Image (cartoon, rainbow, N blue to C red):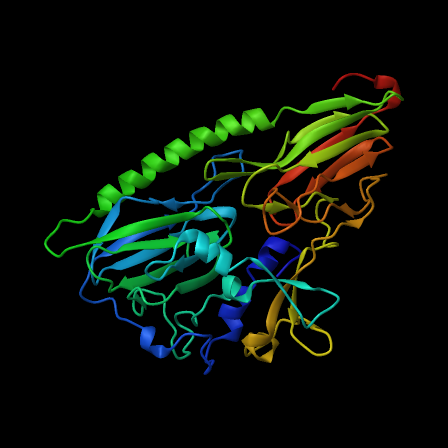
Length: 403
């Protein structure tokens, strides 16, 4: 683990590597859900996609999100594609449950009533899923091609949050009857959903080549939208104060369709001493921070802990065994508040906006503003997305221009 809150959010890697291997207690799902992959075909559904070179796009989408058909007994293999700042889980919804109902039932941010100091936490079910991971040896473990999780439409099957590392897979064997439409979604990103349709035996299903073609066309279309949105979001608004300084309004991320622009836009601005910058995030299903300087571990908004009484205990990565001695005690605290200073006096000054969310999400939206009284080169970062970095150059007062 390092200082990146994004990697702290996917601390399940530590759980997988150290904690649940040999665990004898299931995490909320019975052994009877385990299935075998024999006797059916496999349909590959991608999550996310690689970002174009010199850009940082997050594809909060399934590829393809619609159009694929399967037979009863087939396996749907969800594959996390490579994207350095991507984080997703998968929930396959029970019959009759809508995507909006699922997002309401499994909010990302939930109360932590046992800790008055950190009253919010990342929903444990969203973070860790509702079954032990395949290969853990725990009763009910499932999710790989050898022991895919069984889905008959009677209950939600939820895979844990995982980074878009190009490696992780989640296999689900569908035994729902022909005519069923299987809805799946990411609980972390509201709006990221897809479906496959179960057709009768004897009816041809979409081939692997057809599925790949649909995914490629979808990716091409979404990428084009993202390039256009990036260009529009890179324009700043400048308001001048009576003392000659200015307020520059920028974007901490933007959205185009199913693509999150995980970028500070514009990436680089030039200011003069006394100028201010305000960051907006007006729409999308991500959260961000504006944190000075790049590389600081102060003000992390996502902090692992172990549930305790009367207060939670700091998380210490175990040498062996489950996290916190019991995975049910593991929590990921959410600290949405600002930290440090809003006046960035030199390149080492610490200041963090706190979590910046779009209006209508689980956290209050805000537009953080920082002041730069002195000349210098300032590099800042989003504590949620490691590669979302911006720079500000503050020049000398005698070099005033409209830059």
